[in-house]
Image (spheres, rainbow, N blue to C red):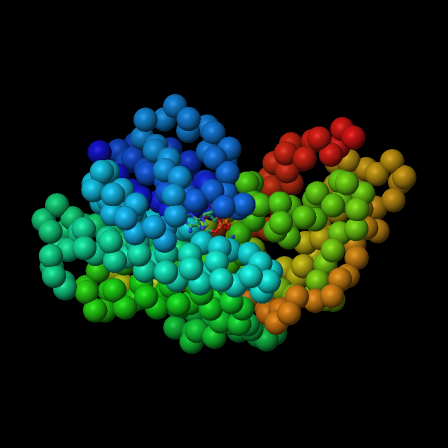
Length: 342
Ligand code: NAD
């Protein structure tokens, strides 16, 4: 059975992806390499405890000796690379870890994979002739949009935060390994994900948690910033499709065609909670929304044109924001039930 190395599998998207992929691909095994930073937890994968097609290794993608050991020990045939420092606010306060993990970590993985799979530029060892490196990236590499327009695969990169600059750098390194060494790579750039298992620090979990705790729900600036929201399972299906069917060297944008302002999201969640768990005071959770000082360099709008992956690979988002958010809130209501019982 071929082993796929998935990095960052204990995080939000990685854990959803591994569970989805193993369920859908009974002939595959996954080795999950994750450093278990504050953002990752093995609890996200507790349902795989007794799955003999799943192996967890705690370790850092910047540790080259470890990566070489993993490739040899598990005869890694493919890589799906998700490990990253991913929170923009943290990248503003502490950019160092973003440069290390997102840039140098990606380089390490690519370079070890190249040496393990290839003989010389353009020439793969027979056993690895179908081996692929799939890089998971973000739409934030394209910078920000005004009221109009969409990010296409051909849009020029213009990253604005240390996070997006580090991801843009990693995309370029991946691209260079295709053009220089003929490596079989595919990159997917996706929009904002939401769904079960996202870290408590991200917008949607924060809104739900603060609402339930009776605390102020902080919304940056005037709440008018727009993101294109993608349900995490739809993203996982897109990664799987591009990994299996994408054309080598190509990039695919994955987005939900679900542009929503931050204030719309906060109000939508409050309305749902008002209906499901009305406040004893009779007030709406919306009364807890509070505008706070805007994030430095806050990009105004992101929106993706997903027609390439839709038309060429047949991807389609199964959820729109209104259906996906209900699934998501119900999952968090279970997670935060301790808040509710206080
Ligand atoms: P996350 O922060 O939830 O998870 C990241 C995981 O990587 C964690 O489990 C963490 O422990 C691990 N990790 C961090 N540094 C590591 C290192 N040096 N070595 C090994 N493991 C390390 O992130 P996520 O939201 O699941 O994002 C996954 C990928 O998708 C990232 O590459 C991110 O840039 C990209 N992405 C995310 C979104 C989104 O909305 N969440 C949108 C577009 C792209």
